[in-house]
Length: 273
Image (tube, rainbow, N blue to C red; front, side, top):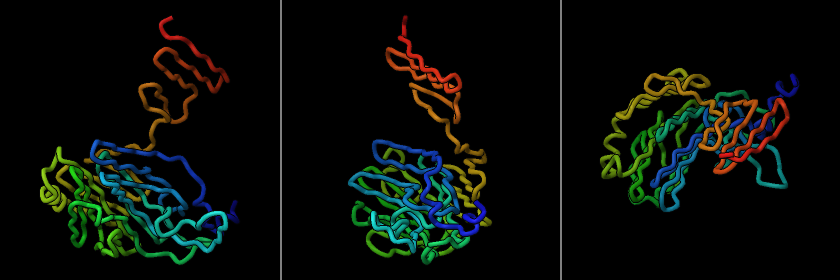
């Protein structure tokens, strides 16, 4: 309603909207994110990107939120590591992820003090090796590597946290393994060749593996080609369907299921008959 829009309550972030999730899982690492999820909107408990490595290493980032609402049934959210105060804009292409934050959004009803920083959970103590530079961080665990390149300076707060201060920031996450690099030094050599820039809501990464560009609420491009973040409803060996299908055909080993929403019918047939 117009009144609700005028008040701009942070509780609008509690709604769960359609999510387009991309996950790259290998035998050595996992990188997963929700593509272009309500950038600039309020968050609640949505976890928008995550990297996993051997040894129980979990790396993720968010904008720490705060709320004036008191909740008796559960801890108040968003919080320091739960959800986002302001959602980022995220684009992922296989093992490369770009995240852009703009914290200059309109103040919300029930919103606590807005932190002008973003932070990343990076458990230095669990890695076999780590390196930290002014605008980059890298780590190795076993045969897995992760590197993060930032638009602004990184500041290590603790053994598990790095911070990037500012109201408009961004970073790129790159993951790899021993099929590409023989050592952390080898991986870091290529990471340092990457150039990340943020200008007028355009986050760009020029790296030896390609060019990536994320425009705030605009296009996400890889090597100059736009990437569609609106995924099909299903895309698997058993069922393929567009975003809003009128029919679904699910094919199993012995049977096939037809669901027709327009005709309100359900039909199951045996294959080979």
